[in-house]
Image 1 (cartoon, rainbow, N blue to C red):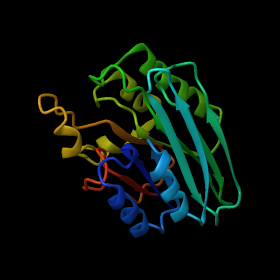
Image 2 (cartoon, rainbow, N blue to C red):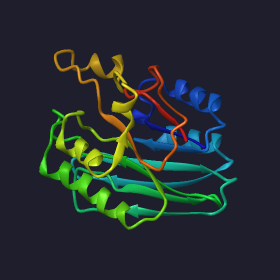
Image 3 (cartoon, rainbow, N blue to C red):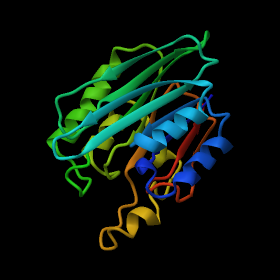
Length: 227
């Protein structure tokens, strides 16, 4: 089984490149997108006709928006989902997907963390969001995968807490050097942040391969997990 996590930046960087990337990876079982809406959302949904989708949109009064969508190939008929709502104005609701493939049950969570403060360091809201995800998944049986744009640096407590609760940090374990690219760095040349995106898996997940794909279709890099 394969899953891709990617913040699309609403198609602002390379709209056609995103569509080309998805066409080239149409054999992926699950796509977990953040920052998807309007034209790019319509085009992707047209491309992924053989997928069921779950989406959530959260619009704030300050014109900030959080838009997530998870696509699961229709060959997985036995699945269910939940939307994890919260009262944090600056954190998106997460999309929880549960797939029962017969021999295994997979729990896959698509998450977009708070963009504030911009330094990507710990805050009360960020730590609370991480704790909420961990507590939620404790109630679920089966193997667990958490991924998306966390808007956090690697040494923050909000990231380390996943490892402390038994999850493998694939960004760390596979020695990934960055999840960003020039589209992000050129906007903030004096504050070059190398990380924002992560994938965590429970220890019972057999990771066959994990790759962060180098391209500039967004200001984030696609994370591809095969398990």
